[in-house]
Length: 563
Image 1 (cartoon, one colour):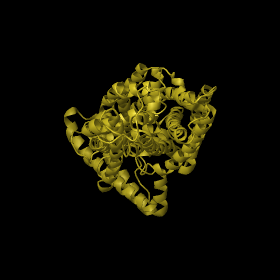
Image 2 (image 1 turned 45 degrees about the horizontal axis):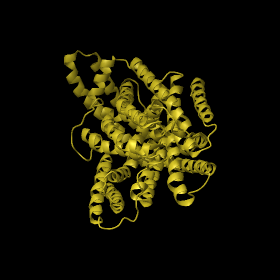
Image 3 (image 1 turned 180 degrees about the vertical axis):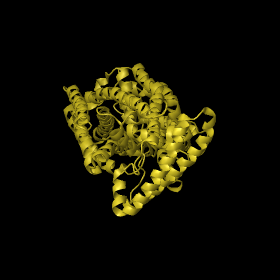
Image 4 (image 1 turned 90 degrees about the vertical axis):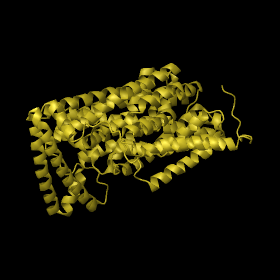
C-alpha cells in the first residue's frame, strides 16, 4: 500500500483514539463509565445507534453481498421502521424510566432473578459471538492486503480496540461513533463517484447491465421459508429480529439509556427508522457498481488470494486451465455488456438475454474454480468478503484507498467498542454485582468492569479467527443472533402481559430455544430470519399456557411495587 494511504490511515486512527481517551478523563463512577451519566444529546445517541449498524461488516460484507447478489438484501431491513416505532411506545420509555443499567434488570422486577440471569446469559452468548465476527471483517482486509495470517490480523485490530475500550467507557465510544458516521458516509459517496467515473459506460447503461444480471432486483414476494431475502421474511422475520435487537439487546439498550430523557431516547430511535434503509441502499449500490466495474476490468479468478496461491501451488496446470476458461467467459460477457451500453433501446432486450447466458457461463467457471479451491484447502470457499478489499487496493486512487480502509477499521473499532462495553456492563451488573458482590465501591466495580472488557475482548478475538471462514460476515453475525433473539424478545413481551407468570416465562424461553436448535438441525434449509418469529411466538404461547396452569400456585418470586 502506498505511503499516502498509510498516512491517511494512521492520521485518522490516531485522532480517533486520542480524542476518545481524552474524553475518558475523570471517569470515577460506574454510571459515568457504563451510561455516560445519562446525559448524551439525542442526535449523538441516534448516530451511535446507526454507527453500530455501520460496522466493518457492513462496509465489507454488505457491499460484497451487493456485488454477488444485488439489492435483494435490502429486504432484510423492511421490518426496521415498524419495529422502532413499536419500541418507541413500549420498551424504550419503560426501560428509560426504570433507571436501570441493563435491560435484564427490568426482567428481575417482573419475573425474578433466575429469568434475569438466563436472559443475560443468552445475551452474553449471542453478543460475544457476533463481536468476534465484527473483528473478523477488518482482519479479512488486512489479511488480503498484506498476506498476514488471520491470527495476526485479528490481533492488530482487536488488541488496540480492547485497550481503547478499557480506558474510554461508553462516552468515548459514543463520540467515536459520531465521527465514524461522517467518515463512513463520505467514503461511500466518494467511492460511488469514482465508480461512475471509471465505468466506461453511462450510469444509465451501467444500471441496465446490473439489471440484466439480476443485481437490481429488490422485491421478492415469494413466500418460502427457505429463502432468506424476501419481502415476507423481511417484514415478518425482520420485524421480530429488529424488535429483539433494538429493544432487548444490551448493546442497543445501553445506547438509548444514555439519552437525557425518554423523548430524546425515542428521537434517537426514529433517526434509524428514517435513515437506515436509504443508507443501506447506498451501501448495496456500491457493491452493485463494483460488479459492473469488473465487467470492464478483469477480475481475479479468486477474490481470496490465498485460495489462488493454494490451487496454483497444488496443481499449476489445472489453475492455468481454469484461468483460461474464466478469461474467455469474461471476455464474452464483457463484449455483450459493452454492446448493451451502446445499443439502441429496441435491441437491448435481445442483448440482455445473450448477456444472461454469458453471465451464467462465467459463473459456472467460477463455481468450478471455487470447488477446486475447496478440495485443495479444505476450507469454505465463499469469497464474498474479499471483493471490496481487492477493489479498494486496485481500483481506488491514492488517498481515497487509505480513507476507505481507515473507515473500515474505525467502523470496526467503534462497533467492537460498543459491543465490549455492553458485554462488560452485563457481566458486572447482571452477574458480578447481583450474585457475587452486591455491596462495593464504584472504584471496585470500575476495576471489575475494565477486567471484564479485556476478557471479552480476548474471547472475541478467538471467535474472529473462526468466523472469517464462514462466508458472508453480514449473514454470519445475524445468524448468531437469531438463535437467541426470538426467545429473549418473547420473555420481554410476556413481561408486559399481566397474567404471565415466572414459570411460564422460563418454560417458554427454554422450550423455544430447544425448538430453534431442533429446527436448525433438522431443517438447515429454513432461513435464519424465521428463527426469530418462531422463537418469539413459541415463547409467548407456551408462556401463557404454562402461566394459566400455574395460576393457582403462589409465585416463587414476588415482584416489587413499581418505582
